[in-house]
Length: 358
Ligand code: NAD
Ligand code: ZN
Image (tube, rainbow, N blue to C red; front, top):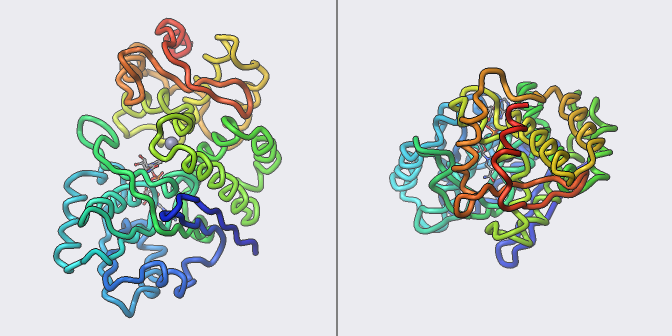
């Protein structure tokens, strides 16, 4: 079975993303990624039920603490962050301790933020268990918690020391979560790699059937794309913003639904189609490419429209509050067609509203 490895070349902070089956059972490699005296393993109850035992066994002979959180975005809070920091303090964790995140993006962002701040930053290892975490949140070093006022408002950049994406764990992932991850996978094709987009069109059935070789290749190609962007623009001064294609629209939908409606990847899928539609109307992208994007989104079982009952003006208001705006003017990632995206400043409200209301 194929193993992939993608390097994130950041000088002294370089690391490898290992992708393939059986990694959770590679006790030696996991243990080697956490060489210090203390390991805090953070996971959630869903993941723990299926996948905790082998990871615990890998760290078994050293001083391991395990923290099993309740699942869900509503747990990505300052209170949970405080709990993790408290655990590190109680176990007497020193600067050579390692925090290991075994879970989806919620666990990764929360555990990563604890690792970023404990003693101003300790070693952090990502063991992503959702497709979304494997292709996106475990790579690139963004960590954060949410506030009642908004998502990801408190956080830090803190790169992991290693990433282990064991494709076997995807067997237990609910189909809806798999599709949400595929939305971020197809985003990489849409914004930067028309060849990868065509590959996804050809492998749609294989990916939905979780055919291991196809899934591992999709993850590796996604990680390679993200790693390249992160290496060129680690702190999002420029190019990294393109990874937010579909996200300003998507976040507006998530916020308006109070995070209880569409999953993040589902909202991004709708958001990418809205951005593509706006781009087509502005004459930036061919309508035929938008049609192909919609076909792939629909093929993956993702939603293609804004859920009924959401007010376009409310969505537009959320978009205006987006972190990425500067001085009030809407700043959006728009599309030049398959494989090309760009940041556009000062997009007219009326044009955006028309797409939201269509
Ligand atoms: P998640 O962590 O909530 O996981 C989704 C659900 O799947 C949860 O219920 C979880 O318990 C369950 N689950 C996870 N792995 C499983 C498995 N193998 N089998 C069965 N169930 C499993 O959600 P997510 O989609 O992985 O991540 C979303 C979060 O990631 C958001 O908070 C988002 O802000 C963050 N994110 C961060 C970055 C970044 O760069 N740091 C990028 C994208 C998203
Ligand atoms: Zn996203």
